[in-house]
Length: 109
Image (cartoon, rainbow, N blue to C red):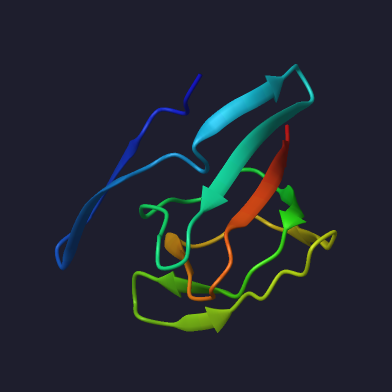
């Protein structure tokens, strides 16, 4: 299962958003759980979180979040770390480290 893509268009910017992760591994009426895997140097496509969510780092890595307006935020996630995030801006996640990043992202419906 995959999440449908969305069109984000403004006079200065046009993009089709990708899914939050690579694969939905579980879903019910309360949560949707995504599998995320990024090799070193790999990035997720532009996407937006429309629901609050938790990220559980199965294998941590040094990541950078970049928003469409160019803001870069370090998002180092240690193995076993858990973080809660509210829905937010359109962004992409890039693994800038030298290890594979594996995570489960849990969207709260």
